[in-house]
Length: 525
Ligand SMILES: [Fe+2]
Ligand SMILES: [Fe+2]
Image 1 (tube, rainbow, N blue to C red):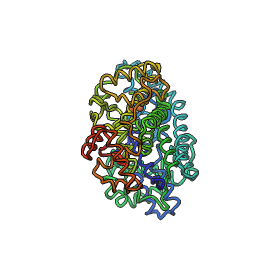
Image 2 (image 1 turned 120 degrees about the vertical axis):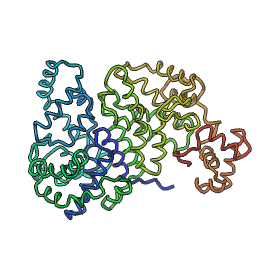
Image 3 (image 1 turned 30 degrees about the horizontal axis):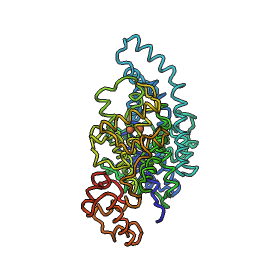
Image 4 (image 1 turned 180 degrees about the horizontal axis):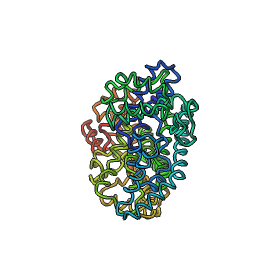
């Protein structure tokens, strides 16, 4: 079978969705800015290479902004609200940005007296450059590194090193000015600010503000061209932007990722998610290692093993929607914060939705990673039959890894204590016994039984055949999909029937259904 290939642009969209959440941007902000910037490129009759640079800069501009978020949160409190308020102001205008930072400090100390607040504002503004500049420089470097890992060429990486620079030299961290700021950077900064201003103030005020900033944040010539064509550029921009539009905008040749490159792209996403605060460093990689090993031990088919590993890399991508200031706070979350936090598997599935193909089964697992067999998980309160073996393994691996990591409101558990916690969850009907034992054995914990049982002793190939026939395929159709001889498929069917103790396709289908082997969103083969 040929190695699956995916469009790199699909990964860019997943990253764009996640960074829009983390930076408080409006829905599909990066995608809409990509459409606007590419329309501008067409109006300006830019060459193919410049268009390619603009396309990537628009989608990826903020991919490094998850780095050191805990420092930003420690200094200013709710960093997502702060970022949201900064999007539509002129960062070269000191009174404007001071007002936003003062507001952030007031939010951070809600019960402070006027004197305490005055002191906090004075201290915060005095320390702002030491706090903000290294963080912003870090965003640029991290963006460049992620871009390198997903295979983007040097010129695109160079643009990502200038995401906060401005035409007038008042940008950060290097204070570049004029033509020293790369042309694609100048175009995308203008396009993204125009989207943010249009979202916040409407079309007329957006145009007025962009015009006033000519020669400040933006190159005057670009502002002229933009304002002359503003109606045309914004036509239909209030409507939705979908995956196909973004794929169609990518300059040819379209970049494809093979199996190894896709794996590295998933890993890059894992690292990007985990670096938002020290508590989560390495979390997704560790969950993936456990889930991968447990899935192998349970004898799942190769495609399931790959899906569960990739789902583990990306399972917390939706957590970026919740401010780090919330995650970092010791003590209980408020009801509203809990609701928002428990929606992160939903956001995770949405972020991965653009991946198409195999990405759908990865997204389905991400959506279920906090579900429990008895329906007590979140966010959909799914139950056992909706939870395939891969989903059960991911839930167990995630729960074990999280328990042995420290959190602001509790210390890390020892491996033995974490194992006991998981076995209690099995006893309470929440986690799957087989999945938990497989995870614990793979984590080096003494096994409760010789080894976690495979599903009725089925081989990976028999599981694949079972899924297909349970979904209605004949032996012949299953043979064709799995690229095996019909006789071989028949042998697998007889063998699996006898192992699970059935004699009919209907009973086999019910067995598969009961164990979550057939359901929408999971790959059948
Ligand atoms: Fe997690
Ligand atoms: Fe999670």
